[in-house]
Length: 294
Image (spheres, rainbow, N blue to C red):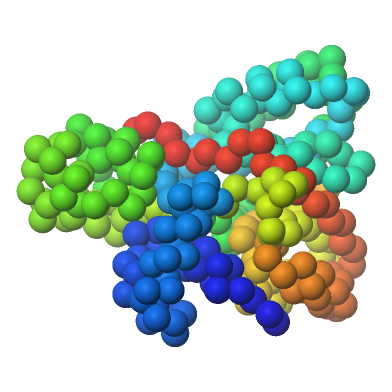
């Protein structure tokens, strides 16, 4: 596969948004100067944002869902309303029979159903299709938080600063919360180790982007684990989750090399455990903001 250095950098930053240039250079096997220049270009151009976000479970959001929306005519008002909601971190315009994809994060099924009812109530919404995630296999801002760990007021201040700039230096963080850089580093590391916090890369996607981003919905015939392992082995897989609803597994594949994504789709389609597949192109990310104050 002809993966570009930017794709490799983005994947590495999605795994660890605060990885040093030296660590990234060693991981990719390229000079540190190249890594430094490319990361700065990706961030300065707005193509990539490095931000922090608390784990959904830490925020009390135990019910996550993928909702596709088919509209009637102009949907700008719907997009504006949905983008303004804290419980909807993702709004994306897509191709195909549906017009929008949104992700909903709710405390429980009752809260989720209330959000879905509100979405359906828009006159411009013809119908919705909902898949509830049962297990997120890969997601930049989803961790296996187990209920341990606590935060205090200073931790909350640090998260607020990291929400806007995930690579802000410990020295600058220390100055703003009036602690030593060592103390700040310890606090951030504790929240990361407790899986309360994730610091990752968010990739801006638009019609002018050089990256192809494709959503995939899979129907499985009983070999869930083998299909999931194959999918998780693709470097192009940005997101994957087992689900209940119209699909058994939902994923997002992205790359600056379209042929790589299409080859992966062909591979998935040929797996004996896959009985059906539906795909959609993400045409433009209208909102992608997983960071919330804690």
